[in-house]
Image 1 (cartoon, rainbow, N blue to C red):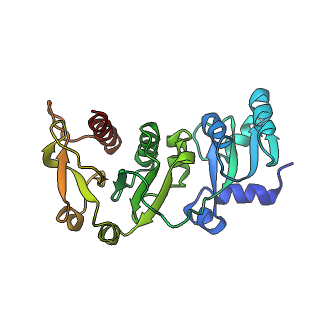
Image 2 (image 1 turned 90 degrees about the vertical axis):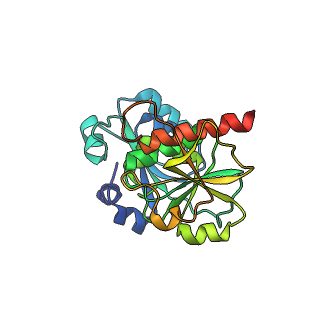
Image 3 (image 1 turned 30 degrees about the vertical axis):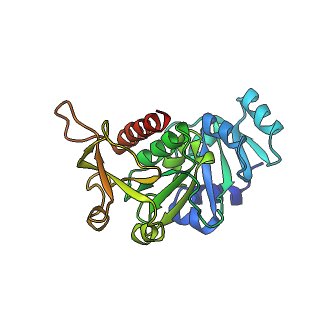
Length: 249
């Protein structure tokens, strides 16, 4: 039986303050829960819909965490999602060891504010095999429920760090900074260096001025129509796809 204390805890995790104070976050929905049980995240407990017998059995057989069964209406009341009849999990946030760049290329995000965009970018990174993500300190929170939901489980495979980007780039001055802008070199003709940071900026303002002025190189996705701009998630996918094809040539 779920206790009032546990219900209060779940509700507290709807807010950034509650997640920070408890070092916990919520994973919601069937796809994300199934990805969660394959990961090394530590789960405090699951709250599942009592009618989802097959899913409940699958989760119960793969975890030592307590599993509580509730009706559909109760699940929905506890969830942050508009439509969640499946269930949720209360999960411990990961404490990563000091961040070390392990790959030739790393995606760097500057001021991404929309949780859906961040979640989509995390999912794209996972699809293309990028295991690390660097975020400016003013990017939206990785463990925001909307971010976690948008990743469709990819959150469980991405290591991340929040940094002051100016200081970060100085510490890694041997790696080229390549910014996605509107007036850079056509990405279809660009010769990617041996290693680099691919930087994508804020949804409205792009890469902040002080970083923009110190980029090593600039790239652009060429336009063949009349649209003013591209969504940052779509831009990330196009750039990474071009990068991967270049590296495989």
